[in-house]
Length: 294
Image 1 (cartoon, rainbow, N blue to C red):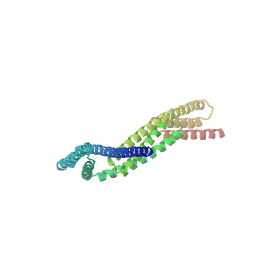
Image 2 (cartoon, rainbow, N blue to C red):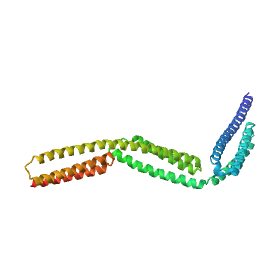
Image 3 (cartoon, rainbow, N blue to C red):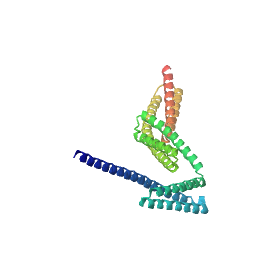
Image 4 (cartoon, rainbow, N blue to C red):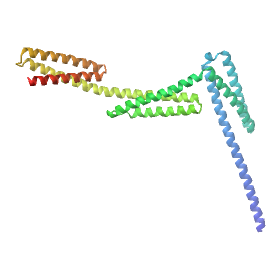
């Protein structure tokens, strides 16, 4: 009985092992089929991209080369369709062979399009664009830092700059993988995010400047008011007419300078306006000290 039981157990075990092996083989085959289907889908997308690229550059490529390359694409696509049919029939090896041939065709087509459209020059321009974008980002980051130190909220702009840097990193990765179209797309996204950041910082600067503008104009008004009262006191004072004339002429000169400063403010030239105001205040202090001594 024990011997019979052992034989039965062995039969069950052997059956289980055979079933497991069959399942494993089936799973491996399914995995290969899935991988091949994904490759077919990628090559189909490449076919569409290349066809679109030929359509967009038909005039530059020329009628003869355009027709020839379209025929090459059609031939490559036909190989893909045959590979799909082979997969449907379970003939994996034939499908692999057809896909290899299709891949070689696409490789040749891509090289021809690359040469015809002078993509070496475009690649150099793309690399230069990535470098230029990094420099612009660095400059905008310095502006953001300065504004932040002045108490301006630049969080949104900083997020956009980080987004731009992310896209640039992706562009560089795509270049390393020779995915040039993808790299160009990422570079475009980086520039778009950089522009958004620049616009946000420009708006933040404008708002900050406007608040500064109000303060400068208020300061000009106060100084002018002080000069008007000073002129009135000078006229009513008992100082000599000669001194009165000197001071009143100086007050007129200062008021003219303040009007110039006001114009500078309206033009957005705040530094120049502040320089004029400081000059006026300095001269007022010098004159006041002089008359206190005398």
